[in-house]
Amino acid sequence: MTDMAELRRRKEPLNLAIVHVDPDAFIANLMGWLEITTFISALRLGEAQMPADGKTPSLCAEQLLKGGVHDVGNDALFAFCMTAALKADKAAVDKVEAALAESMGKEFPGSFGLWHFRAAIDAPVTLEDFVGQAGKKMLLGDVPPPPLRAKENWTSGLRFFEKARKSNFIHEIMYPLAKWTRERWTETSDKGVAFLHHIEDNVPVLREVLEDPRNDQAFIANALLKLAPAVDMELTEEYQGFLRSLARRN
Image (tube, rainbow, N blue to C red; front, side):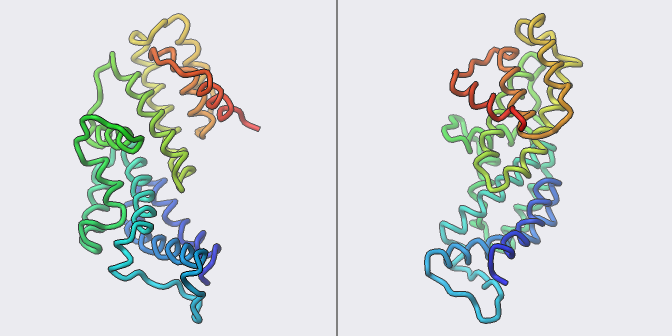
């Protein structure tokens, strides 16, 4: 049946593909997600009616060019590229790009989202620019030298965190991001404390942050908040309050 239950049914395998960076599952389920979101949007606008057979209509070539379809595709592919970047799995992104280009053409829904991870953006402006360029480095295994590593990890983590909160796949991004955050700061705790600012103050804070065993949004928010001074980053009082609110668990 074409309704919200169908929307959830089609989103679930895409969610799993993003969490686990499974290119085959992503390729297999993206079109179904584009179809159901497009149709439900049309229903809400009064531009479509429920089909007699209850089946979600397929998308024609013309519909695949529409802006709304591309917005949905960009959101999904951007999320996949983010989790792939967190695992440094460039092959997964390459496989998805090749398959979608072959089935829908080079301007497939999601191609613009992918562009941010492929292009050389010398002067990033948008959040997507910053995330894409950070993700591009991760996918290429371009690791900064130890003196710069913790600060770049913090900055990349902040950008990914902000972008995840704007995505329809927020939960699917947050878990891999939390694991990545823990891995990067554990590495710093083990090998890179000499490059932190005010070591005597911030090393105990770092160890306290890592004591939290849960890999979730609250863990990431707390890490960003508490470890900003360790990498000489300043947060406004308003943003500190925002992170503090997200770091609380009910």
